[in-house]
Amino acid sequence: MKKKCITILIAGVIGMQLFSGCGATGSDSQPAAGEHVEGGTVSPLFTGKLEENVTIRVLENDTAIERGYFAALIEAFNEAYADYGIQAVDANMDQYLDLANDGPYGYGPDVLYQANDILMKYVAGKHILPLPVETLDCYGQVPEAAWAAYQAPIDGKVYTCGVPVNVQAPMLYYRKDLLPENWPQEWDDNQNNIPDMLESWNDMFAFSQEIRQTDASRYGFMQSIYEVYFSSGYLFSYGGYVFGNNNTDPEDIGFGAADAQKGAWVLKQLASVMNEETIDDTITRNAYSKLGAGTYFAVISTPDTYTTFLKELSLGYQKEGLSQEEADAKAKENLVITTLPMLPESGDLSEENPTLITNKTMGGMNGYAVSAYTKAPNACLAFVDFASSYEMMMLRSEYLGIAPARSDAAKQAGEMSSLLFARLEEGNIMIMPSVTAVAQIWTPAQTFFSDIAKDAFRPAAEQKYMGSGSFQEGLDAMCKQIYDAIFTLSTSN
Image 1 (cartoon, rainbow, N blue to C red):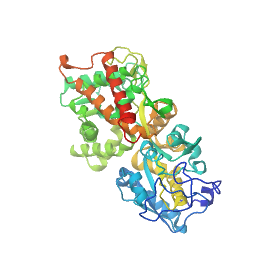
Image 2: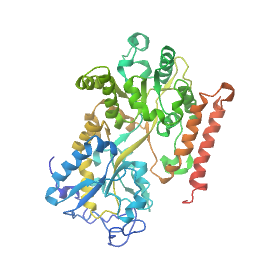
Image 3: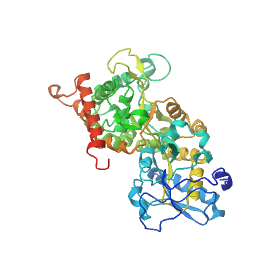
């Protein structure tokens, strides 16, 4: 790994006064280890001098650690910066630590890797640093939609407090070898050599019904409707949204906006071809093994779980008698990841020859932030620049199957990354809001989606959602619960 010159890394930053909390100002003092400092430190940063002979603790994604990527990253970084005596180490902390509580006492990491909604909740308390991202190698290769996920307006200025690494959004995983042998004749009406169930939710619905009728032990499409991250996209596809003003105004809660009730109806229809495990997160947890065993034909998951699915499918083939080498090769051939099918404009999955609309999804932007409590901000910036380089993003994609946030890496990482990157640029991935209020959407939305799933298994006389009006009432009630959680019931507002 070629050593990068730190002079280039921080060129243009000399003399820039950025502060330890986004928008914070004050003295040069640094907290002693274990000393509590309200709202973060207030020292000038990125002044052009790289700290030497320092150790920076990096909190990484658990999967990256398990799959060996993180070890490769820190080994390469430590080699590149050995002359400066800078060493990056595993922070050895839970990936879901609370920096707001741990950081002020000196227990947090120096660099954090997390989803944008998790990292950006630390902005208000000044727990992460605004970064001079224009100086980073990745700056011109990352689209504005990705940078926007880490931007915060403060005192009339916009600060960027994180560096995007990979795009997260629901994708369709399916087993190519579980397609019927006659699919070119029976499931390719437009003769484009793509199975119909991959292009239209109506056809996926019909295909799932056929599988259930043929073999009661198997399923077509399976999804935990309870999972807000996966299910909210059906609402977005018909005009729903999380918060107004580009996800910055939590007073405007839009899950029930426009024709979002059609998306809720779609979810109930899909639940009817599943089993009651769709009511909670069971399917999300067992998707790997069930797809690998051939119990499920298709599921929804995120790009970074590709290697886990691949491993489970290989194990399934090995149980059938193949060697590991043969099983690995067969798994790579038959596990396919692609974008979600299109939805019927009407919301009716039983409609023949429907007018189709593009499926929108909730998405996230995973990336790095620098703790306001670090004593080596320039070394941390060097690590973030190194970790977001083309070479390291490509290596991360190789190890984990992620979709890089860099356009140059996304083009080289494979078809899946290119598809996901294109959806991001087209506005079909709605990035989770980077405001604290987003924490209040999950429980009310989970309750509503779970209730929709339950409805598919209730006796007809007891079903709650039987028409557009009842779905709209449910959505409106959910939005009110979210509003109350943010503005009425919360003690922090």
